[in-house]
Image (tube, rainbow, N blue to C red; front, top):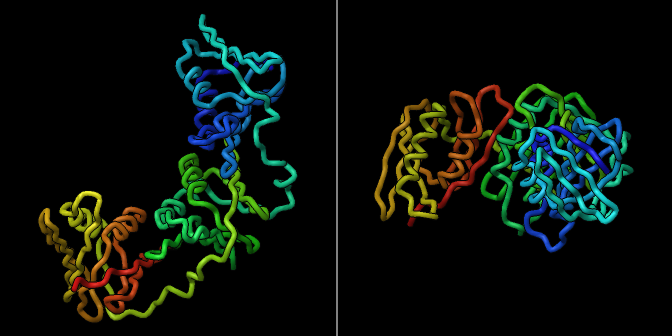
Length: 369
């Protein structure tokens, strides 16, 4: 193979495909990117750690000989980044050596056969699957509003992913970690369908999605979820198992309801955790009395008390929470005010905003003895 292309375009493609390259593996081929060049098309790069595969779109290049090779992703990226010229040329021989030329520099690196690189068979990704379409900014925002509730504990592997479910012309995304639930939805006129997608794949997808109105399409096969945009295709494994019936957990009944300004509430929680011991999150107490919400905490490092004006309905209440859960929620939404519904001191609370397609549930902590 033999090609030359713009150095920055190649570097951008390497950064994209490199997000799916395995950082720690005993299989050297998984530390590589697959580089393919085709006359009349250009070059394309693929990273694949067998859980996530990211393919770039075709990058413009002058190709004089088509071919493919697997190159160490980190080494090849460093070479391209430090190259002196604006153009870089790559030529390979029949022993899988790649010579990289830019300006007056010439570096040779050892590659591996393209046939050894793991790929996803195109037969699994046929056009017969139902394709869903959404704006990139919408999908990016829905991931942002839910991803922090994906479980990190492997005790229940199904909860280390988010549930995508299209039903009744609504796309719902749900993440649960046994202490909280994050839910986001958007209207989508499409047939029913869905899958549970690993949190890591969605984190990577969120990082590479543009924050604009460009279209993203996605579909599900028996074993994979595929997301396609103008500049990439991300293929992820899906998780199997029974997801928790989250729709049966939310309860609209309440004994106490609070409507509070989001920014002031977030700031109060962030100040409350300043007295927490290092690497340990302390409980925060919420006292709801009349139209006032007091947030307080204390530890061996100190104590804090803060007040947030609010509108309340129902009974006065004192309840304890892990403040991190509230902080994650309040940072993820954009509305000026939030509606929080409480029942008993041991019942989960729900957080919503008026006319917004998200809702959250947080389990409280037991009051100290």
